[in-house]
Image (tube, rainbow over all chains, first blue to last red; front, side, top):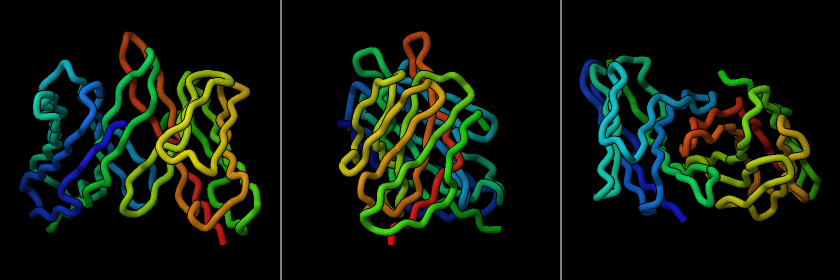
Length: 115
Length: 115
């Protein structure tokens, strides 16, 4: 099955600086890679996702890049703000037999924005 | 937030007792998932469903069973709860269209404590 590794486990950056979180995956059949943000005591919320036919996707201050050959993808947050402080999860998944069989998540990165 | 509710939101139970958690959706999505979230492990897939009466096992299915008799409801049962099943349980839903898995949206979660 799929295995997703996420680094770092904790990331502290100064407000206004950029943050980068990296993930690798093992299953070359995976073709869907979402990123979730989870605040303390809340549910995971999708912030951006990318499919394997695309190399990069941006949404305002957030971008995700995908390297299919190397099997890794990264989340980039620019101009970080205090409200970006949260735990971020990457995930990988795909379809088997024509269905959607769930996502495999990384273990999360605790992003701390220092004022 | 997508129309997903979970019940109960919190539960304390004793080792050896059966427990059933309910996930209810109003989105008429085909796919439903149960994940558990534990510190240091991220989110792990327990079981998923790809239609009424159609379910399959995930990464950590031992000790759990599921049922889906209606599109809107997906039940997770711990036949005989153990302390290792103390966790936060999240339900998620998604659709699959155009050859792609669509976004997975998460419910608010259920905190289960097994004493």
